[in-house]
Image (cartoon, rainbow, N blue to C red; front, side, top):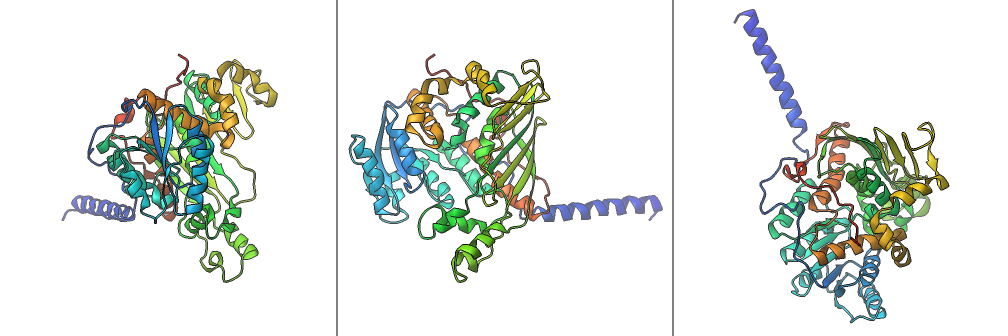
Length: 459
């Protein structure tokens, strides 16, 4: 073989070996390949109008009762059935319904598959799912397969495969599957969304989203409650386990899945310390929280780049001693908004971009750009409650859209892509922060889907 031919062959072999190595490192990566659509797109999907929205609830221990309160405060609703593992929790939730002057809903409390009987009924339009994370997908699939719209607590799914199952089933059944990201309906988040749509920040370039919340106290919920099942996840997984409270609003600011989409992500975690320390201080040596080590890093940081060239920083921390924050930061070519505390600066409007407007100086932004939804329902939302009223606003909007045959503000593609941060971050952390592609759950429809509407309920 001539020298030039030898070098060419060696180079090809080297590339093949490198390619093989890279391919091997992706062998256990989450499934990122688009699948063939099994139904019709759910982008801008309009379901037939419902005069009355008949609800069934699965899980009424922690979040479920709040959703029931919100539904009861909305016109044109009925609570038909309630399902839970515990009779006392189901009865407590049913009493909320009867105390409000409505008929007692039927109860399903005979085991962990009782929800299947409830979903099989023909007098329910929508199922609200507020259960441990691992049950979200099977319950949502069951609801849609029985002709019900599925409304799922966050995160909607834990694996990329399950994200695709939600997408495929929603498309095949033509039923809504919405992850109930309530933070999108916070007053500040609605205000910032409206300001983004009006172009006040210019072209958007960067966002920062987080869920920083010291939840170590949940470890005392050993037999029942959120901590009884959520704590186990920290012993098995390492990544961003709860990304959507911060991500949801920023994704809507940036029109993710509606003109742009998340392209790829890199993620790192620090070491795990705080839950192990908390377990040793607060529980006996032979307690289950001390028998299995905690592996999830105390703080996870992920960096995302979108197809249109924007960047995001997404953080998660549920154990460190620090104040609550979701960051809620959005940066454009003309200015920025930051949360916790709220602050804003916009070139040409603010006195200077060298300092923030905050506190009482923000009043003129709310006066001028308050979201129409909050203008109409903000006072009632505050009275009904639920995270400052955002829970009610979310449910009011769900009911409004179902009764008027309008697309929901969050669709199954949002549920899948926002939830996908978790398994993608776990893979990236396990592979020294390598970047990994996001699946395109919309199968290209993101290019033509309309942004979330800034609708006026009185228009």
